[in-house]
Image 1 (tube, rainbow, N blue to C red):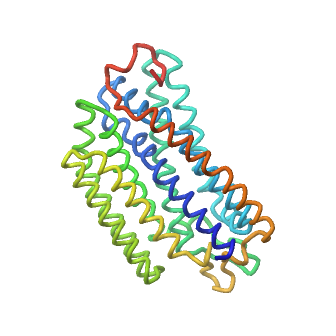
Image 2: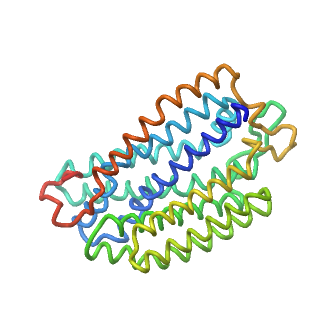
Image 3: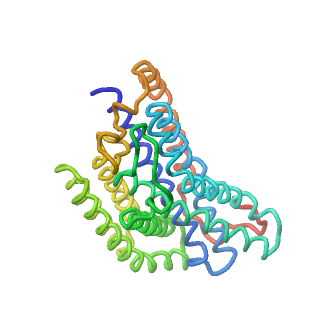
Length: 337
Protein backbone atom coordinates (compact mmCIF):
# COMPACT_ATOMS: atom_id res chain seq x y z
CA UNK A 1 0.00 0.00 0.00
CA UNK A 2 1.34 3.42 -0.98
CA UNK A 3 1.97 5.97 1.75
CA UNK A 4 -0.62 8.27 0.17
CA UNK A 5 -3.23 5.54 0.72
CA UNK A 6 -1.98 4.94 4.26
CA UNK A 7 -2.44 8.61 5.13
CA UNK A 8 -5.84 8.80 3.50
CA UNK A 9 -6.83 5.86 5.72
CA UNK A 10 -5.29 7.46 8.82
CA UNK A 11 -7.12 10.73 8.19
CA UNK A 12 -10.36 8.76 7.83
CA UNK A 13 -9.62 7.08 11.19
CA UNK A 14 -8.98 10.45 12.82
CA UNK A 15 -12.24 11.89 11.56
CA UNK A 16 -14.05 8.75 12.68
CA UNK A 17 -12.62 9.11 16.18
CA UNK A 18 -13.55 12.77 16.25
CA UNK A 19 -17.15 12.18 15.21
CA UNK A 20 -17.62 9.32 17.67
CA UNK A 21 -16.17 11.20 20.65
CA UNK A 22 -17.09 14.79 19.91
CA UNK A 23 -20.46 13.62 18.60
CA UNK A 24 -21.80 12.90 22.06
CA UNK A 25 -20.29 16.18 23.32
CA UNK A 26 -22.31 18.04 20.70
CA UNK A 27 -25.39 16.02 21.58
CA UNK A 28 -25.15 16.82 25.28
CA UNK A 29 -24.56 20.51 24.58
CA UNK A 30 -27.44 21.00 22.16
CA UNK A 31 -29.87 19.14 24.47
CA UNK A 32 -28.99 21.24 27.51
CA UNK A 33 -32.30 23.18 27.62
CA UNK A 34 -34.35 20.17 26.50
CA UNK A 35 -33.45 17.65 29.19
CA UNK A 36 -32.63 19.89 32.15
CA UNK A 37 -35.21 21.25 34.57
CA UNK A 38 -32.98 23.40 36.78
CA UNK A 39 -29.41 24.58 37.18
CA UNK A 40 -28.35 21.39 38.97
CA UNK A 41 -29.54 19.29 36.01
CA UNK A 42 -27.59 21.52 33.65
CA UNK A 43 -24.46 21.19 35.77
CA UNK A 44 -24.85 17.41 35.84
CA UNK A 45 -25.11 17.38 32.03
CA UNK A 46 -22.08 19.62 31.57
CA UNK A 47 -20.06 17.61 34.08
CA UNK A 48 -20.64 14.41 32.11
CA UNK A 49 -18.47 15.85 29.34
CA UNK A 50 -16.41 18.32 31.42
CA UNK A 51 -13.33 16.10 31.85
CA UNK A 52 -13.22 14.86 28.23
CA UNK A 53 -14.55 17.43 25.76
CA UNK A 54 -11.22 19.19 25.22
CA UNK A 55 -9.41 15.87 24.76
CA UNK A 56 -12.01 14.86 22.19
CA UNK A 57 -11.22 17.97 20.16
CA UNK A 58 -7.60 16.83 19.86
CA UNK A 59 -8.83 14.42 17.19
CA UNK A 60 -9.96 17.39 15.10
CA UNK A 61 -6.65 19.20 15.54
CA UNK A 62 -4.69 16.11 14.52
CA UNK A 63 -7.00 15.40 11.57
CA UNK A 64 -6.57 18.97 10.33
CA UNK A 65 -2.81 18.91 10.87
CA UNK A 66 -2.48 15.55 9.13
CA UNK A 67 -4.48 16.80 6.16
CA UNK A 68 -2.30 19.91 5.91
CA UNK A 69 0.93 17.90 6.05
CA UNK A 70 -0.07 14.86 3.97
CA UNK A 71 -2.37 16.49 1.39
CA UNK A 72 -1.61 20.24 1.29
CA UNK A 73 -3.58 20.87 -1.93
CA UNK A 74 -6.65 19.22 -0.40
CA UNK A 75 -6.27 21.38 2.70
CA UNK A 76 -5.83 24.55 0.63
CA UNK A 77 -8.86 23.91 -1.57
CA UNK A 78 -11.04 23.04 1.42
CA UNK A 79 -10.14 26.19 3.33
CA UNK A 80 -10.57 28.44 0.32
CA UNK A 81 -13.86 26.92 -0.83
CA UNK A 82 -15.36 26.17 2.59
CA UNK A 83 -13.96 29.25 4.30
CA UNK A 84 -17.18 30.67 5.74
CA UNK A 85 -18.51 27.30 6.92
CA UNK A 86 -15.21 26.37 8.56
CA UNK A 87 -14.94 29.83 10.13
CA UNK A 88 -18.40 29.42 11.64
CA UNK A 89 -17.40 26.00 13.01
CA UNK A 90 -14.20 27.43 14.48
CA UNK A 91 -15.99 30.36 16.14
CA UNK A 92 -18.68 28.03 17.50
CA UNK A 93 -16.08 25.68 18.99
CA UNK A 94 -14.22 28.60 20.59
CA UNK A 95 -17.41 30.06 22.08
CA UNK A 96 -18.42 26.63 23.33
CA UNK A 97 -15.08 26.06 25.04
CA UNK A 98 -15.15 29.50 26.64
CA UNK A 99 -18.71 28.82 27.84
CA UNK A 100 -17.68 25.68 29.69
CA UNK A 101 -14.97 27.61 31.51
CA UNK A 102 -16.86 30.86 32.21
CA UNK A 103 -20.36 29.59 33.02
CA UNK A 104 -19.70 29.04 36.72
CA UNK A 105 -17.50 32.09 37.35
CA UNK A 106 -20.32 34.37 38.55
CA UNK A 107 -23.26 33.33 40.70
CA UNK A 108 -25.93 34.91 38.50
CA UNK A 109 -28.87 33.21 36.77
CA UNK A 110 -28.69 35.65 33.84
CA UNK A 111 -24.93 35.06 33.46
CA UNK A 112 -25.41 31.29 33.40
CA UNK A 113 -28.36 31.51 31.01
CA UNK A 114 -26.28 33.47 28.50
CA UNK A 115 -23.47 30.95 28.54
CA UNK A 116 -25.97 28.09 28.32
CA UNK A 117 -27.27 29.56 25.08
CA UNK A 118 -23.67 29.79 23.84
CA UNK A 119 -23.13 26.10 24.68
CA UNK A 120 -26.26 25.12 22.74
CA UNK A 121 -25.35 27.19 19.67
CA UNK A 122 -21.68 26.18 19.90
CA UNK A 123 -22.72 22.53 19.85
CA UNK A 124 -25.53 22.70 17.30
CA UNK A 125 -23.72 24.66 14.59
CA UNK A 126 -20.70 22.30 14.24
CA UNK A 127 -22.97 19.25 14.43
CA UNK A 128 -24.92 20.60 11.46
CA UNK A 129 -22.08 22.13 9.44
CA UNK A 130 -19.74 19.12 9.61
CA UNK A 131 -22.41 17.10 7.82
CA UNK A 132 -22.86 19.83 5.21
CA UNK A 133 -19.09 20.02 4.70
CA UNK A 134 -18.57 16.28 4.27
CA UNK A 135 -21.61 16.03 2.05
CA UNK A 136 -19.97 18.53 -0.29
CA UNK A 137 -16.60 16.77 -0.08
CA UNK A 138 -18.15 13.49 -1.22
CA UNK A 139 -20.47 15.07 -3.80
CA UNK A 140 -17.75 17.31 -5.19
CA UNK A 141 -17.46 21.04 -5.77
CA UNK A 142 -16.60 23.17 -8.82
CA UNK A 143 -12.81 23.27 -9.24
CA UNK A 144 -10.85 24.80 -12.10
CA UNK A 145 -7.68 23.40 -13.64
CA UNK A 146 -5.59 24.92 -10.84
CA UNK A 147 -7.86 23.20 -8.26
CA UNK A 148 -9.33 26.52 -7.14
CA UNK A 149 -12.90 26.57 -5.86
CA UNK A 150 -15.08 28.51 -8.34
CA UNK A 151 -18.44 28.31 -6.55
CA UNK A 152 -19.96 30.34 -3.73
CA UNK A 153 -21.80 29.75 -0.47
CA UNK A 154 -25.01 28.79 -2.25
CA UNK A 155 -23.08 26.08 -4.10
CA UNK A 156 -22.49 24.35 -0.77
CA UNK A 157 -26.15 24.59 0.28
CA UNK A 158 -27.35 21.86 -2.06
CA UNK A 159 -30.00 19.27 -1.05
CA UNK A 160 -27.53 16.40 -0.62
CA UNK A 161 -25.20 18.36 1.65
CA UNK A 162 -28.08 19.80 3.68
CA UNK A 163 -29.41 16.28 4.21
CA UNK A 164 -25.93 15.34 5.39
CA UNK A 165 -26.10 18.17 7.90
CA UNK A 166 -29.47 17.03 9.21
CA UNK A 167 -28.07 13.50 9.49
CA UNK A 168 -25.08 14.48 11.62
CA UNK A 169 -27.24 16.82 13.69
CA UNK A 170 -29.82 14.14 14.52
CA UNK A 171 -27.34 11.30 14.98
CA UNK A 172 -25.10 13.35 17.28
CA UNK A 173 -28.17 14.42 19.29
CA UNK A 174 -29.14 10.75 19.68
CA UNK A 175 -25.53 9.83 20.56
CA UNK A 176 -25.53 12.52 23.24
CA UNK A 177 -28.84 11.28 24.64
CA UNK A 178 -27.44 7.76 24.92
CA UNK A 179 -24.31 9.09 26.61
CA UNK A 180 -26.39 11.00 29.15
CA UNK A 181 -28.44 7.89 29.92
CA UNK A 182 -25.16 6.05 30.45
CA UNK A 183 -23.60 8.71 32.69
CA UNK A 184 -26.48 10.01 34.83
CA UNK A 185 -29.04 8.70 37.29
CA UNK A 186 -32.59 9.40 38.40
CA UNK A 187 -35.01 11.61 36.56
CA UNK A 188 -32.42 13.01 34.15
CA UNK A 189 -31.53 9.51 33.05
CA UNK A 190 -35.21 8.65 32.53
CA UNK A 191 -35.79 11.79 30.48
CA UNK A 192 -32.78 10.96 28.30
CA UNK A 193 -34.10 7.45 27.65
CA UNK A 194 -37.56 8.81 26.85
CA UNK A 195 -36.17 11.35 24.37
CA UNK A 196 -34.14 8.66 22.60
CA UNK A 197 -37.23 7.22 20.93
CA UNK A 198 -38.39 10.31 18.92
CA UNK A 199 -34.77 11.34 18.34
CA UNK A 200 -33.95 7.83 17.17
CA UNK A 201 -36.80 7.79 14.67
CA UNK A 202 -35.66 11.16 13.31
CA UNK A 203 -32.03 10.02 13.12
CA UNK A 204 -32.96 6.79 11.34
CA UNK A 205 -35.07 8.71 8.81
CA UNK A 206 -32.38 11.24 7.96
CA UNK A 207 -29.47 8.78 8.11
CA UNK A 208 -31.19 6.14 5.97
CA UNK A 209 -32.03 8.72 3.29
CA UNK A 210 -28.53 10.24 3.29
CA UNK A 211 -26.68 6.92 3.34
CA UNK A 212 -28.80 5.45 0.55
CA UNK A 213 -28.34 8.59 -1.57
CA UNK A 214 -24.59 8.44 -0.94
CA UNK A 215 -24.39 4.78 -1.91
CA UNK A 216 -26.47 5.13 -5.06
CA UNK A 217 -24.68 8.25 -6.32
CA UNK A 218 -21.11 7.79 -5.11
CA UNK A 219 -20.68 4.41 -3.41
CA UNK A 220 -18.61 1.39 -4.36
CA UNK A 221 -19.79 -2.20 -4.35
CA UNK A 222 -18.18 -2.92 -0.96
CA UNK A 223 -19.60 0.20 0.73
CA UNK A 224 -23.02 -1.47 0.81
CA UNK A 225 -21.57 -3.33 3.80
CA UNK A 226 -20.81 -0.07 5.60
CA UNK A 227 -24.30 1.23 4.83
CA UNK A 228 -25.99 -1.91 6.16
CA UNK A 229 -23.79 -1.94 9.27
CA UNK A 230 -24.46 1.74 10.02
CA UNK A 231 -28.23 1.37 9.58
CA UNK A 232 -28.41 -1.79 11.70
CA UNK A 233 -26.26 -0.27 14.46
CA UNK A 234 -28.37 2.89 14.58
CA UNK A 235 -31.64 0.95 14.91
CA UNK A 236 -30.01 -1.40 17.42
CA UNK A 237 -28.79 1.51 19.52
CA UNK A 238 -32.30 2.96 19.82
CA UNK A 239 -33.76 -0.42 20.76
CA UNK A 240 -30.99 -1.13 23.27
CA UNK A 241 -31.65 2.14 25.07
CA UNK A 242 -35.37 1.38 25.21
CA UNK A 243 -34.37 -1.87 26.95
CA UNK A 244 -32.23 0.16 29.39
CA UNK A 245 -28.97 -1.30 28.07
CA UNK A 246 -27.13 2.01 27.94
CA UNK A 247 -23.68 0.50 27.42
CA UNK A 248 -24.76 -1.47 24.37
CA UNK A 249 -26.75 1.49 23.09
CA UNK A 250 -23.69 3.75 23.25
CA UNK A 251 -21.50 1.17 21.47
CA UNK A 252 -24.12 0.74 18.75
CA UNK A 253 -24.63 4.46 18.10
CA UNK A 254 -20.85 4.81 18.00
CA UNK A 255 -20.74 1.94 15.49
CA UNK A 256 -23.37 3.71 13.38
CA UNK A 257 -21.14 6.81 13.23
CA UNK A 258 -18.17 4.62 12.31
CA UNK A 259 -20.14 2.94 9.53
CA UNK A 260 -21.31 6.28 8.18
CA UNK A 261 -17.78 7.71 8.12
CA UNK A 262 -16.46 4.55 6.43
CA UNK A 263 -19.15 4.90 3.77
CA UNK A 264 -18.27 8.56 3.17
CA UNK A 265 -14.51 8.04 2.89
CA UNK A 266 -14.95 4.80 0.98
CA UNK A 267 -17.20 6.55 -1.53
CA UNK A 268 -14.69 9.40 -1.84
CA UNK A 269 -11.52 7.31 -2.51
CA UNK A 270 -9.31 7.67 -4.55
CA UNK A 271 -10.45 11.29 -4.81
CA UNK A 272 -10.05 13.62 -1.86
CA UNK A 273 -12.09 16.43 -3.43
CA UNK A 274 -13.94 15.65 -6.68
CA UNK A 275 -14.55 18.39 -9.22
CA UNK A 276 -18.08 18.82 -10.55
CA UNK A 277 -16.73 21.05 -13.33
CA UNK A 278 -14.42 18.50 -14.93
CA UNK A 279 -13.30 15.16 -13.50
CA UNK A 280 -9.77 15.95 -14.68
CA UNK A 281 -9.66 18.82 -12.16
CA UNK A 282 -10.39 16.55 -9.19
CA UNK A 283 -7.93 16.30 -6.33
CA UNK A 284 -6.85 12.73 -5.64
CA UNK A 285 -4.63 10.97 -3.14
CA UNK A 286 -1.89 11.16 -5.78
CA UNK A 287 -1.97 14.72 -7.11
CA UNK A 288 -2.81 16.35 -3.76
CA UNK A 289 -0.17 14.64 -1.61
CA UNK A 290 3.12 15.78 -0.14
CA UNK A 291 6.45 14.30 -1.17
CA UNK A 292 7.22 10.65 -0.28
CA UNK A 293 9.94 11.82 2.13
CA UNK A 294 7.46 14.00 4.04
CA UNK A 295 4.97 11.15 4.25
CA UNK A 296 7.67 8.78 5.48
CA UNK A 297 8.69 11.12 8.32
CA UNK A 298 5.05 11.66 9.25
CA UNK A 299 4.50 7.91 9.38
CA UNK A 300 7.31 7.40 11.88
CA UNK A 301 6.03 10.27 14.04
CA UNK A 302 2.53 8.77 13.99
CA UNK A 303 3.83 5.34 14.94
CA UNK A 304 5.74 6.81 17.89
CA UNK A 305 3.12 9.16 19.36
CA UNK A 306 -0.29 7.72 18.49
CA UNK A 307 -0.15 4.94 21.13
CA UNK A 308 0.73 7.51 23.82
CA UNK A 309 -2.26 9.69 22.93
CA UNK A 310 -4.61 6.70 22.85
CA UNK A 311 -3.37 5.42 26.21
CA UNK A 312 -3.75 8.83 27.84
CA UNK A 313 -7.26 9.35 26.51
CA UNK A 314 -8.31 5.82 27.49
CA UNK A 315 -6.98 6.47 31.00
CA UNK A 316 -9.01 9.69 31.18
CA UNK A 317 -12.23 7.91 30.31
CA UNK A 318 -11.45 5.18 32.83
CA UNK A 319 -10.85 7.66 35.66
CA UNK A 320 -14.12 9.52 34.94
CA UNK A 321 -16.19 6.42 34.16
CA UNK A 322 -18.71 6.68 37.03
CA UNK A 323 -22.22 8.09 36.76
CA UNK A 324 -22.82 11.65 37.91
CA UNK A 325 -25.67 12.30 40.32
CA UNK A 326 -27.39 15.48 41.49
CA UNK A 327 -25.96 14.78 44.95
CA UNK A 328 -22.42 14.96 43.56
CA UNK A 329 -22.90 18.60 42.51
CA UNK A 330 -21.59 20.95 45.23
CA UNK A 331 -23.11 24.30 46.08
CA UNK A 332 -20.29 26.20 44.30
CA UNK A 333 -20.85 27.06 40.67
CA UNK A 334 -17.70 25.45 39.27
CA UNK A 335 -18.18 23.02 36.42
CA UNK A 336 -16.23 20.19 37.97
CA UNK A 337 -17.11 19.07 41.54
